[in-house]
Image 1 (cartoon, rainbow, N blue to C red):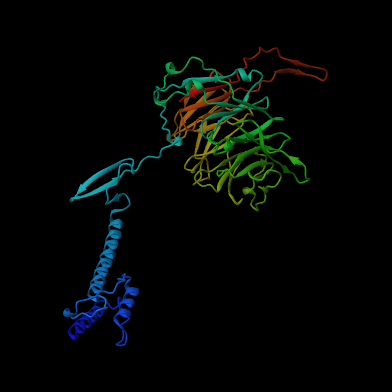
Image 2 (image 1 turned 90 degrees about the vertical axis):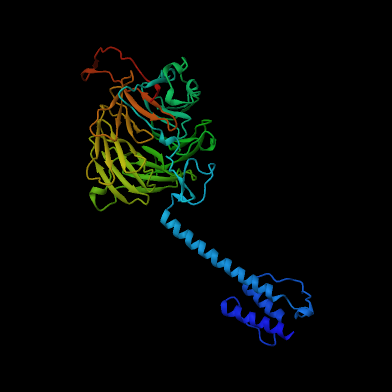
Length: 515
């Protein structure tokens, strides 16, 4: 019995010397072995056996004493496992730092990674994950070579028989429908045409694969109360969620309207008041990049509404408060553009030929000037480094590099000889710039090349005032028409003599082309 006690005491002392942190407390002579076991259980987190083991007295072990030899062995094994785990973590961290993020030491399943390349080195398998190009509607690859020709898909003209001209067209963000504006104060929504809805592979579309009936009719028509100044889609509109299919309009002498594009009912109105508390109409309107705010353009100022709070509550931000005259923007604010890469940066165009760049808090970045007419349309590139601008009675499309805004970066020539708003647009891969013109020709420029002659698409119309590219498929919509005035040859106090000019052929329609 004494030999057994001495052996136990000797093993306990050796354990304390090897790992003093594991047994931080040593029982005194007055403490029994059960208390010693409880102390070790608390420090080592080793579960103790609930039952008291009855030992053989002939082997020198007392009845009712716990088996301390097994407890000590478990403690040693636990300590070795903890040390090995820490060593593995250190080695793994060092390997990650050397190899990098692109290589993993474990085999990755094909269901988890779209495309992988497996390499076997020194008996170990490494899986290299190949970086996949971004997929989605905004990365369609366009290539307009010298032999390229557009394919006519559909046309809508009968509904515009009473109109003289359209005021552009805009695809919905999900590409499911097209919104148009015309001089009869009507907004029309056209669903994607049925004769091409069956197309699965747009790379192999031919004129013979399109159904012969290519007429196109609107699914919805909304009449406004007067001359429509501007209109814009909600940036996250989707036909899969009818609650989001809305668009904004601003009309002469009326509030800003939020329309339902599915049923045609009025969702909400937003109204601003001038300094003498009279209602005033906005000249331009647009959602911000988040879709939570509505930006409206007025004379030398903008107002910002919260889409969830219809009414007159808004933020009034004047654009002529800077102490530096060069940073003040004058005139009627005609258009907006929001940077897709830096959501806190936006641009405002003015009919006084200036373009203002602002931060979300209203601070001025720069005021650009270079057009000979009032700015009517703005567009940022997808990477946010370029800003494109067009103006009325100005045949120059200007490209500004936001990294060096001292002068325009590039100039693209088109034909704009009227006060109309002539739209332009970038392809979804930012490779080509497309614009209409008052000569009835659609022009396509390669933005990656210098001084390149554009591709020309004759439309058969006198004026192309709107172009819009579907975000999901390579389909271009163009809107045509322009105002025609009678030619006055003599104007006296008594009467006016009008020249007997032949009647012009009125062309006012929407056409779809496969790019």
